[in-house]
Length: 282
Image 1 (tube, rainbow, N blue to C red):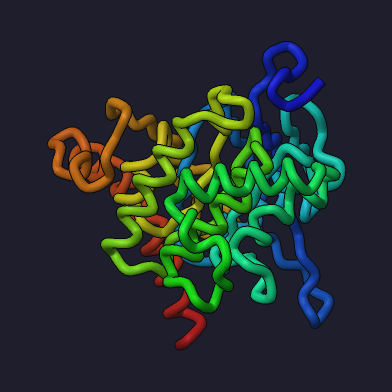
Image 2 (image 1 turned 45 degrees about the horizontal axis):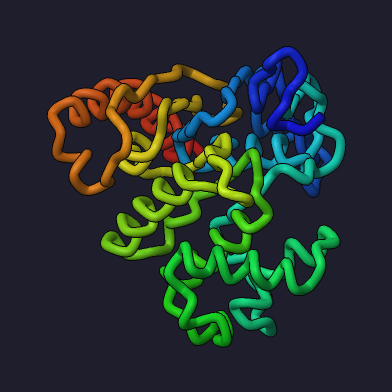
């Protein structure tokens, strides 16, 4: 049984009372997230927003199996996370590409690591390079690409493994505004497209961002986290029709209404974080 066929129709992701405490160099405990309850349904696109340093990225590492909760449970497909689930893909803020490999070799790396024969891995990699518009660049190295092109490589590198859960940690934050919008549209297109063998991909996505407009434009629902240690404050549905174009959807009156509603909640947590920082400085 795979994550795509969860027991009893379970959600793709569940965090139940998840708490993560890290040890600082002094030996004290730092609570990054506490009593975190979050559900992501199969095929759902969820954006997570919150103040800087509140624990959003830690939430992703718990789901990915890179970290274990100190308390509570983390389930993927109805099963407790033990190690790194093979059906989970992770796109980091920094490009996780191999600088000594060509674009094609980078995208082939995942399937080859999973035991896919070289010819099949090459064919799958070329198919995804075609989908992200990089066919003409397969022989180049990462340093020969623009920032947007490297992000396309990172997407292809992750999606070629046909993940059923896609975790994204501020993947477009380093890009300029225009390229960021283009990459957001590309992500929506690929997410709504087809996976290996032509099946609908519709991975369950958890997308961490500091950009509230980006969150609303992409997601089915937006989760607002509290000032650290993070827990879920509120969950807001985004009832905007799909398919969406990022730049045009932002001009819709309903988009502005949703933005105001979410910012009323998020803004309070941002202010709390700033006041804490000002207090420490004093």
